[in-house]
Image: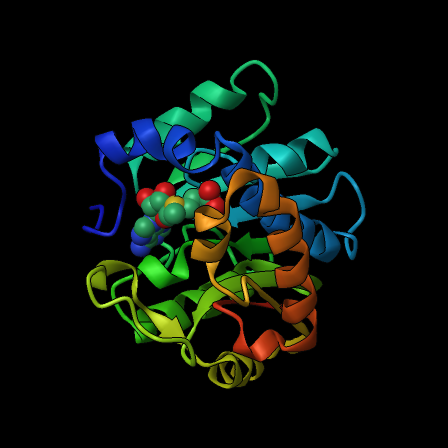
Length: 233
Ligand SMILES: C[S@@+](CC[C@H](N)C(=O)[O-])C[C@H]1O[C@@H](n2cnc3c(N)ncnc32)[C@H](O)[C@@H]1O
């Protein structure tokens, strides 16, 4: 049932070590986590949370550690196996579900907070990504929050990596959100100079590059490589 956008066994085994183990990867992780945590401020601790495209649980585990009750959904059994291994013992109440983001197997109005990071750009098309946002809103409770992250349409394409290339316009995301009865609360950006700027920076400059990038991203969120829209249902 899994689509070819789901990660393979090999990708699952190297995902954390290839991307987030060194100083640069940790900096990128911190940027993403800080935006996620600022969205999560809107919900009480112990609220029920669902991450769509949770992968190995890199971010899910951070929220569990802060007292949220987090479940995860992913289309890759291999990523879910890594996630299960990472959190096993620590967070036994976490449910991990093998499913597609375009067909979320939960009832309407189930969760207090639903989020997705680093997934929508990897889906099969922009229409599928927008449809998946509708699914996330559907399973969120009335009055609750949904955070979606996506590649910004207004940034240049990466032609040699078409699979990770679905890009959305911030305005079309906000329009779709409204169609599903939710209201955008804020739009933020990250990686104004691109993630590659952090990855290419010499080690001693990483802190400065990240700080300048953060400042530029605050000023011009809609021109950043990645956009985040927080909405309220
Ligand atoms: C780049 S990883 C992101 C994982 C995690 N969110 C993170 O930020 O570390 C993308 C994840 O999306 C999953 N995925 C790809 N297509 C999917 C789909 N259609 N539905 C659900 N998950 C999908 C992949 O299996 C992979 O685990």
